[in-house]
Amino acid sequence: MTGALDAASALFRELTGYEPDGLWSAPGRVNLIGEHTDYNDGFVLPFAIPQRTVAAVGLRDDDRIRVASTFADEPVSVGLDELDRVFPTTPGTHPAVPEWAAYPLGVAWALRAATGATGRGVDIAIASDVPVGAGLSSSAAIEGATASALNELWRTDLDGTALARIGRRAENEAVGAPTGIMDQMASMRGERDTAIFLDCRTLHAERVPLGIADAGLAILVIDTRVTHAHSTGGYRERRASCELGASLLGVPALRDVSVQDLSRAQQVMDDVTFRRVRHVVTENQRVLDTVRVLREQGAKAIGELLIASHASLRDDFEISTAELDTAVDAALASGALGARMTGGGFGGAAIALIDADAVAEASDAVTAAFAASGFSAPHLFPVTPAAGPRRDA
Image 1 (tube, rainbow, N blue to C red):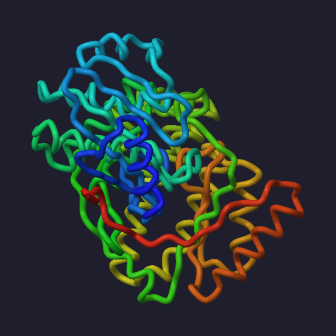
Image 2 (tube, rainbow, N blue to C red):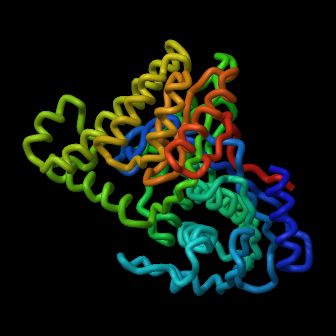
């Protein structure tokens, strides 16, 4: 984390010639279980991770907003009053800025639209140690850090849930990625050693203690290094299938379909749509079951639910990859209690729930399996549930 703080500060000084007014950061997230249920008004169980994105921010004397990032060559600058033209909300249009810049600029646009904020322009320099494209929500971390900074500097006084809504609007309408609100809520509401049991319809959030370390366990992230982008076609197609399934069943969202309803669902839709629906319906039930098992038996008892989630994502939702399947299979073969892909799919990362003293052995086994399959070496690291956004300086 010190590296990202130093990098953001240095980039800000390079950009402006002076020190920022503050440093704000927000975490990425791992989704323990509940994939592609959020935009179906369902249930999810994510937690924030120690890896964070930092925004070094300073007020300007004019009405322009300028953003720079350590992963982009050139800064982007627009007038605050130009943001409505930069982010037209007509379906099928694209922002008139590079995608990386659409995240922080989109937050500024959404925050102004929601609150009528008329604050001064700002310079924003962004650095991060959340892996990009790994399914760990680097985008929500950017949104959370930017929203936290602007919320304070523009004195809009919104709470974490309201800022999560701002982030989701930025991602949906400014960036054009049709995601739900899980990532933003996990980043904004995270707490140490705790998962967030979130009802994505009502945004009611309950904190569920995980007790990972106390149980002698670890959560190992296996970043396949196969990057993905939620604004591209596969994610959109899955969401469209879910909306079609809900329409055919006459319900507002797949949240309103139970496991017992699946036999009827199979009669009124084609096979592909049915399998997409079946994943979401059974995944919602797996989230509820995981919360119950965690509370009654503890983290050591949830492994089979994680395994079932991956099988459903692989076979019914069809968003896994050969690399993700290899990661899961190798982790399980080396003794993991459970493993699954995490995130939107089509690349990204898997997670394995494993005995803490077996992390090195499992990591070696996964790396060897990737090499045997001819894949590039994965990036493996353990994570612990961490706190949400904060001001670092």
